[in-house]
Image (cartoon, rainbow, N blue to C red; front, side, top):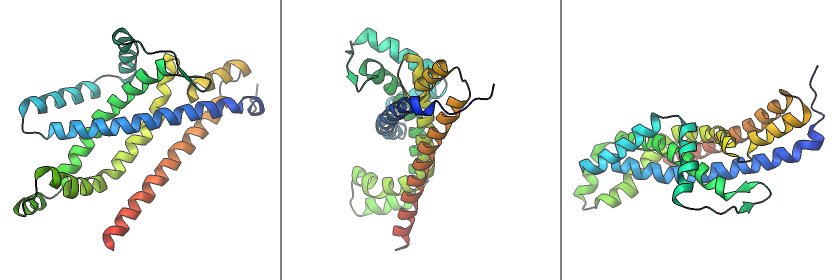
Length: 230
């Protein structure tokens, strides 16, 4: 039987709800993943062996285990430590599911972001650090005003790719009941008995999200390059 897209008239609001949830999860994950990444990148660059060892262990464990396993560990493990109330944002976004799920993705992303940032920092010419030190600047000031601005410009494409991956990886949270885009798609599939057409609509929506982010980052990168030329 040839599938049609006539179901969109009835079920498109479900897609909108799922897309909004996906965007909320992605924003949360990007924000905290970046903070975690910066923290562990600086820890791994530390000369203190214990701090460097903790960062290296975290990064290797996260990068060496499936994200699905990490989501389940945090979803079931966090509930044994603290009780997260069933507070709904909108009709279907439950904090009891959102917090552990998004936190798991943020920790996973943080490991990859940490390595990207670390590589960006190491790519900055050491001569600039030495020149800043000769002027009496402290390490924190050097990192904030000299190294990090250049590192961010160098790693922006890689960071952008990581953020795009995060949007797509958020689909894995449907396994713990979060009603994001893939979960809503499953609802449409079961209601319409059409397996392919609902997935095509979902693919288009994911493409719109990722393409928009890609263009945004590309514009920001061009602006940075323009400022450097000026």
